[in-house]
Image (cartoon, rainbow, N blue to C red):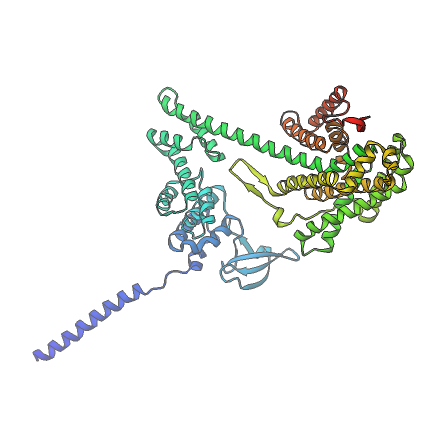
Length: 544
């Protein structure tokens, strides 16, 4: 009997132990709640409920919730009203939506706009979600994403974000990201720390260029009591002054770069005119239209090579040179050679040619502006620091203008054409007497100047609209550069271009763009009263 009872008790004990272990096993093996289940309550939730759901997603789903949170903060998360299913939507015809399941992207068909609703947020909630996104991104393997996350936390760091950033700072190995994290932590200390922490933060933030830092220092100065915290106020003011001084220096460099960039545009526009006006003495009012032809050549080449935008720009350079140069030779052979020694008639004739070229372009391409696409390698900017950035297209145009100038200088100094041009420009009769075909030299010189104008049009097409009136915007500036630098002197053209470009850009912040141009024009008029032959006048017989 005792043996029987013992067996029953043993069996019961085994059942109890097995039941307990099974119960524990059920708990430990329970699958984690899926992202879809965690996010499902977002459909129709109130703002406070969304805030709580977002925090739960952060805690339980982690980085997997980032696409959902990004869609939520961007206002791209919808749900279907009848079954509360979270969706992505695309616009469909007849004011309808094409629906996709948010999680598996399956096609859910077309629905009316009243059948779906957006998961709505407001500014405070979006700011909170961005903090969650930043905290989750801090652990990303991609350094760029971690850097972006830290930058996003500038000025909006709450206590949870601060703790997450402290932990991430200890684990971060990238020095650039460490520096960003230190700035974010100093900004937090400046706002929420005690006086010692704020003093340390002011010292750490001194001289920083980020706009968030400068704004935070100004706010801290405004909120600091000068009587009770004089040392802190002095430290904050010193840090702010240091930052402002550095910003002003970099803004000066920025203005200098834009001045050189504008000067490079003037150089490309005026280099051809320096030859035709300076060397041949021809007042070519159609010079701007030759620049325009170069810009339209770029547009046409891009239309012929729509899948090779980057290569089309390189091919456009010789094409524009040939097109504009050929038109220039036709103008010289057809009109200008018959008007030698009659500058007024030459001016009127070339003005008429400019109108003909404009109308021809309007008839062929229409009066509307045409767009030349900028290739990828010319897009974007070189970000040196938060204040100073150099756009790639203007940087390349500056280098291109200097290259064109160097090649032009080489042609004029080292080639037989350049030698003949200089001989004809100095003494036409003597050059003809020694066997130089002056008519051929005139045509080639005008073609070279026109071709350079066409190459300038390629560069201009990348920074402005291509239209029939493009050349008119640069003809006055081109003449000013040649007159200021000295007719017939390429070095004068170089100095004149960059001088006028820098003067314009330094005047613009004070006077405005229009008044700056007027002041530059007045300056040149006064200048040529004193030096009629320009900054670098020709010497010797050529000047006579």
